[in-house]
Length: 227
Ligand SMILES: [Zn+2]
Image 1 (cartoon, protein in one colour):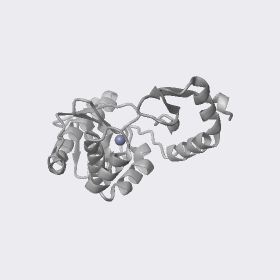
Image 2 (image 1 turned 90 degrees about the vertical axis):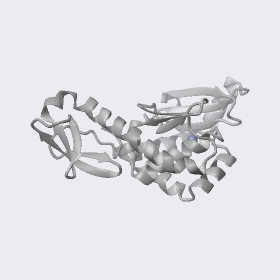
Image 3 (image 1 turned 135 degrees about the vertical axis):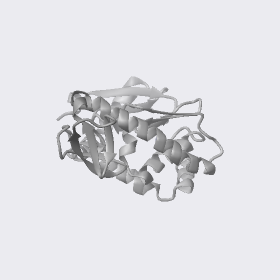
């Protein structure tokens, strides 16, 4: 594959002083460049980073080999708080979906809408759990979030808004609690340090000294956090 064959999206932002390359969660290439950089300069920077781009793509491919497509059949496993629960299809139960006795129980009537039923379940559980964890976490912070939302985010686990709101992807509830805490703490630090600056990482390190371990868990297992 050649550089010319790749679809590369370029975004100019005043938050960048140099050109940097990212591989999005869908495998596409994104380039962030300073607003002051001319198009020719950005093109040249991309060319000079050709090796880096292809090694990042190779790494992305390797991580995404673990991708699973889950079918809603008996025995299929689904993640919840870092554990796998197998699915049992049930005739008539009180709610469409629940965890019971170490299994996900899905009412057969909802099979056609299973995807939505699972997402609703994860979204509701994520909101409750994040609020519960946040109560403990925010004691260590002066900036507190004004609003918490659980959504389907593009290409990220969580994000913050300029109005001190925090958004989380519903998939976060598939990670172990320690990793969920990391995602929350990461965003809490952003309320004070918006960018991934040195100050940001120093502060994060202070609030959660073992954060790299959780970040690595996400890098290795994020691809499995899907329906
Ligand atoms: Zn961040």
